[in-house]
Image 1 (cartoon, one colour):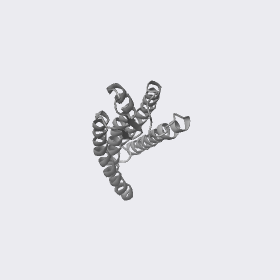
Image 2 (cartoon, rainbow, N blue to C red; image 1 turned 180 degrees about the vertical axis):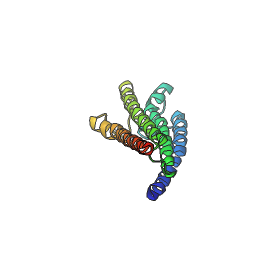
Image 3 (cartoon, helix red, strand yellow; image 1 turned 90 degrees about the vertical axis):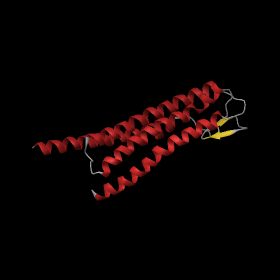
Image 4 (tube, helix red, strand yellow; image 1 turned 90 degrees about the horizontal axis):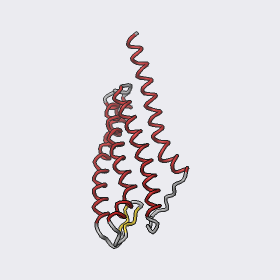
Length: 170
């Protein structure tokens, strides 16, 4: 139990730093994206001079969605690790925090894939810095597997909570 508390304290601190850094990077991302540079590379986006505001918004939407939903994921993971660091492993609070993180992760990544496909479809003349392809492997590896593992782990915690409650009631 002591190892869980100490490890979850480190994870909680990492999640807290993420909760601060992601919104800051989002603001920097927006400010840089709406400025009119010669050529600006933002994550997987290249903003070219003379692009209209609509094209800039559309080009930045996949990463913006990732950053917004990522903030919520990290926040709920912070709450989960906070519960663990206090020794509250099999509690409803910990289970709900982990489930919310999983759902925000899954929905955010699926919206990222959809907005990326829409951006590629509507901005045919648009340059991408990296060659990100919408393949089944990428979708499964990055966008579905991790949140499903979070949901599985939350289900295991929920079952442990029920067993703990039934043993206390007996």
